[in-house]
Length: 192
Image 1 (cartoon, rainbow, N blue to C red):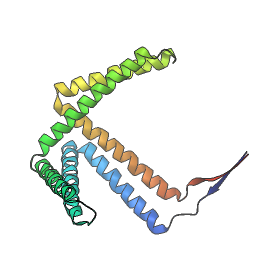
Image 2 (image 1 turned 90 degrees about the horizontal axis):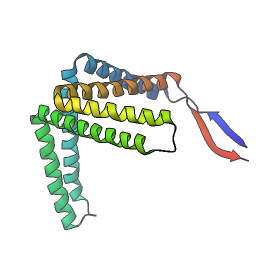
Image 3 (image 1 turned 45 degrees about the vertical axis):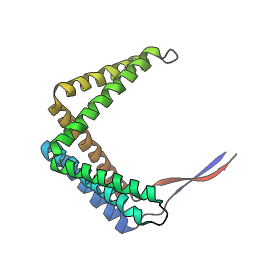
Image 4 (image 1 turned 180 degrees about the horizontal axis):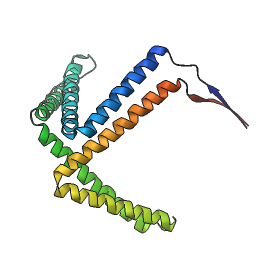
């Protein structure tokens, strides 16, 4: 069996500079969100609101396409207006939007924890260590969920921290990929 691997040619310098620039911006935003959590939370709310407004406008604009029926056009106008309205509400009341996200996060963690505990308790064909880990992760998820329900401010800080860490990792990866300048590509030629 032969698997051929080859190095791709280097991406253009402009693309690499763009990757480094975007990576630096992502790292900078992540560090500022960690250092100033209130700014991070407000930024998430504003970005979500802007995204909703743009999506709503896009839905309304699509009605001018000749491929839509009258009912489809009416539905897109109504749903687009609702999405624009929701985006505007998020812009007008960013703290309520953030609170809603925190409640969703907490409910999601609660159900994920319950699912992990059920999996750990009912999986008979996996090792004891794996079952114990599943039970432990489930208990931790439920505990964090209960803490967030008890103190929504903790949930806001946690949400901000998770988003900031994800952004930091993405930024570092973007910079590293641009600095390396090449990636290993596996071709589809496999011979046995």
